[in-house]
Every structure is written in structure tokens, then in C-alpha cells.
Amino acid sequence: MVQSSLVSTNAVCCWIPLFALRCEAARQPDLTSQPHALLAPELTRRMWQVSPIARREGVRPGMTVGQAIGLCPTLRLLEPDPVHYEQEFSALVAALGSISPAIEPVEEGKVFVGVDGLEGLYGEVENVIAVIKEVAGGSRLGWGRGKFIAATAARRAKPGQAVIVRPEDEKPFLAAQSISVLPLDPDTHRRLRLLGIKTLGKLAALPEDAVTSQFGSEGKKIWRLAAGLTIEPVKGSVAPEPIRATLTFYSAVADRTMIARALGQLVDRALKHPRRLGWRVQALRSSAALENGASWVAAGVLKDPSADRERLLAPLLLRLEQAPPLGAVERLTLELTGFVPGTQELQLFARDAAAAARAGRRRALRAAATEISTRLRRPMLYHVIEIEPWSRLPERRYALIDFDP
Amino acid sequence: MVTPPRTPLRPDRLRPLNAPVRVAVESENGKLFIDRCSVEAVLDSWQLDDEWWRHRISRRYVEVMLEGGKRVLLFEDLTTGEWFEQTP
Image: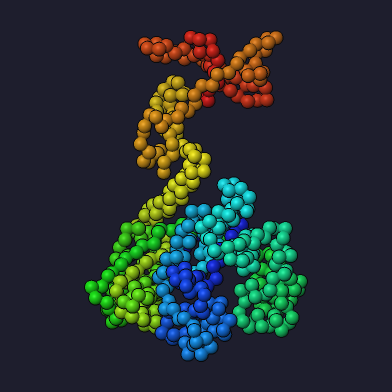
């Protein structure tokens, strides 16, 4: 993603745990009263996300269908529909983008919103939270300086509620949290538990050098997080909008070779899109609508962004090989979702890259102008235009006109 | 100045810029006051005559420094005797 000046120290974390399961529950409201679980979108047929009722019966993610049904005979198993979940999450991210330009999605169901400066528009912190709640209804919200504190606050919030951690409350808030909020590998977590360190307060009370010598660079990192010394800002990005190419088959296709060939055609089409000029692709995603009503998705993030057909295809073909669609494909879609600017050698595209970035800024400006007009009930942004610049009378040289980006 | 890319130019959407604002000029004990601020120095002055063929415009511009150092551009409408402040 393109690094930009869209950086915000104050962050709100919007978190919807078990996002995919929530999407299914929204589609089928009768699910909420019965134990249900989503199957993993792979051939292994294991549990992926488990509802709280099923969890009480002993069903856990990773279990086989046999194990789960054995523990909970009334368990309702759901085929995953990853495309639907991604669409829902994209809609949430887009809605949050209308509030703040600094939006950083982390994973499905978790997104950070940069809130620096929003007080000027909405007033108190509580008002900003209320505006975010309007678009992210049932999510848990956490407000804090930096992403770690915001995410930890969101974990403590109830659904649809917010926990606000003001700078003066950071230390006591962090000290009371369990070490499970830290990004730890299981081994480090176990070692900390064995040492009797169960809260961030206990960890931060240890000398930094001692923790570093015990756990290396990871130790230093977690100590600084626990002590509230690491304030990682939210970083928004400016990039072209996703490029999408779709292919609908006359009759559903199950043959992997055919699907692979179709993916190649879609990559070719997407790469030729004018919006792609000047940008290398970093992230792409392919999705398929299946004959049985389910869906399939394959996503790839390239370590080295590229505009090369074969390199873009590689992660999709690997996924097709390892976890093919669980049914015949009716419609195949490819989306180029992440971009970085063209390299120095690609000067040919540099002008296009700048144009695309300008287009992004213009969109943001248009949204801001609309927001101002809506809130103040009249346009307050103007252009200065020349009327008679040669006139000897100053009032006749220039005039203001409503800014209409 | 920004050039508007797509905004259609319509007279009813135009707002005046640098329009003259009427001010009160008073003289007291040999000192000049503009809206009750005393004039420290007259920096420059010139006369502008224009449009004598339709509606005569005749102005005497004066650039002054007010108490506190603020520089202000004024003109006297010689046809009416009124004083105005204007951004250059």
C-alpha cells in the first residue's frame, strides 16, 4: 500500500469478533437461537468459527465434523461464503472511510480508524464515537493513543459499546490487562505464565533489560507495549480503487485446468485496465460463485509487488491446487486490491501514478466539501476566479464562486 | 489562485471579493481617526478616475499606517465624499 500523510496517533478500533458467523446470523436470523458453526473454506471439513451456544456444548474450532456432531447432535453446520463476508467487510470499511480518511483494515472484522482532528468536526470524543457507532453498529469500539491501546480497549468493550482510554488513564488500564492481549507466540506466553507474569502491569514492572535478555527482541517489543511506550499510529493509504474483472461461464465448470486458464485471462484483462497504469499490484483476490450456492475465494499478497502476469497468477494457482472450489464454478471474478507506485525505471507510468493519486485526493476533497455543505447547510468553500484581472478597480478583478470539486 | 476545473461560471453564483467597506473618518485635534483608530502616518496616496463615459468613478486612494502598525488602504469617493476601506 502507498504510504501517505494519512497518519493518526489517536485510534479507534472497530472489532466484530467471529465476523463471518455474524454475517451468517444477519442473513439467517433463526440461527441465533440454535448451536451453529461455520466449516473451514478448505477440503479438510473442520470447524472454523463456532457460535457461543455450540462452544458451550464443547465444540471448538479445528474439530472434525464427526467430533463436533458427537458433542452437539443439534449443531447446524454452515458452508462458508467468503465472498459475502468480504463484501460486508468492504462495505464497513467504505462507510468508515466517510468519517475519516485514515482507515487501516487489519483482518475481517477488525479495522482501525484514525481520529486525529475529528474533534474539530464532531466535538467531544463521545460524539466521534457516536458517529462511528452509526456506521459500525454492533461492533466493539476502543479509543486510545495508538493501535495497541485502541485494540485492547475494544477487547474490553461490550458489543455496540465503546471503551475510551484517555492518555492519563493509559497506565492503570494497561496494568490491569491480561498478557493474552499481547501479540505473543504460544511458547513465550507459556513461559510468562510459568514465571507468574499474568498481567501487563507485572510485565512492565520488570526491568526492560531483564525482559529483553530473557525473550530477545520480542521481549523488548512486548515490554514497551505493556509499559505504554509504543504508540503505533493508524496509517491510511491512498491508492487506486480495486480493479475488477469477471467471467461468467455458459455452463458451470469444475475442471481445474479450465479454471486456471480463466484466471489467466482475468489477470490479463485486469492488468490492461487504464487505472492500473503506473501501479504495481501487491494484493489480489479471486472469488468464484459456485453452482451449489456457496463461494470460493483465493487471495494473494505479493512480497515483491509486480505487474507480471505469471507472478500475479502464482498465488491464485497455488490456492486452486491446495484448496479448490467445493463445487462447479458459475462465475469467476478477479480483483486487484492492493497497489504500490511503479518503480523508478517505469518512468513511462509516473505521470499516470501522479494522476491516480490526484484523483484519490480529489475524491477525498469532494467528500469533505459535501460534509461541510451538509453540516452547515450552505457551501462554505469557494474558488477565487478571475473576472477582470486588468481592471484598475480592485473589487472587479476577482470573485468567489462555490467550490464544486 | 485555483482554477476551477468543472465549475460552470454563472453570475448568480458569484460572490464579490475585495468589495469596499464603508468606514468613518474623523478628525480631532489635528489627528485623523478611522473607525476610532488613530492614523500614525500616511504612506502613499494616488487618484483614480475611470468610466467617465458612463458612470464616473473618481477615487482618492490613501495608504495609511494605524496606531499599532496595521497598514490599511482607504479611498475617498470624490463624487459622494464617503470613505471606504479596501483590500488591495
